Amino acid sequence: GAVVSQHPSWVICKSGTSVKIECRSLDFQATTMFWYRQFPKQSLMLMATSNEGSKATYEQGVEKDKFLINHASLTLSTLTVTSAHPEDSSFYICSASSPSSYNEQFFGPGTRLTVL
Amino acid sequence: AQSVTQLGSHVSVSEGALVLLRCNYSSSVPPYLFWYVQYPNQGLQLLLKYTTGATLVKGINGFEAEFKKSETSFHLTKPSAHMSDAAEYFCAVSPFGGGTASKLTFGTGTRLQVTL
Image (cartoon, rainbow over all chains, first blue to last red; front, side, top):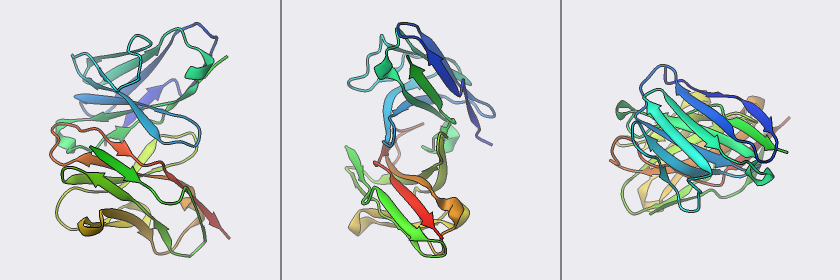
């Protein structure tokens, strides 16, 4: 149980375009989803926390207008990177949690974004 | 406020040797502690976690960790390394009783190399 998927697994886009990444909890209802960014050979940095039906809470330094997060249902959250630039290239990982998971987050497989 | 320190960004052991990955934490409240493993271009997989109760926690793949409050440590061990253990390992902390889901603070990671 507790499977989280992400789509796409990798994406290449041109500078200036927008890219949407989906995060789905496949077998449980995720009241909270988290979005992380991971640069090569570095740790995960939390970008934002998303509660279903509410606006996302962004970490300091993360541009909310650039990284749009939507958590419209208990099984789906999306991250849209708007007007992407090469410096946005990174590995984006989502995680999901539910009231019954006692602070445990279940992680998706990640999405590799490359902006040309 | 919470923080995690992982001593040693790279650890190399011989196959069959003891694995010891160090993690120290700082937390203003009692912590939940986690170890995750990440294989290349994949998301994170939970190895084990400490919430409450027994301080020696056993996880998957033969790994275990001991919560030592007096030393603020949660070191990860495995008696005998296997080639398949080669990966990146992350220690993480979240606040105890943080509600439905709490933020994870990750350490910088330790890359485990296993040699023949």
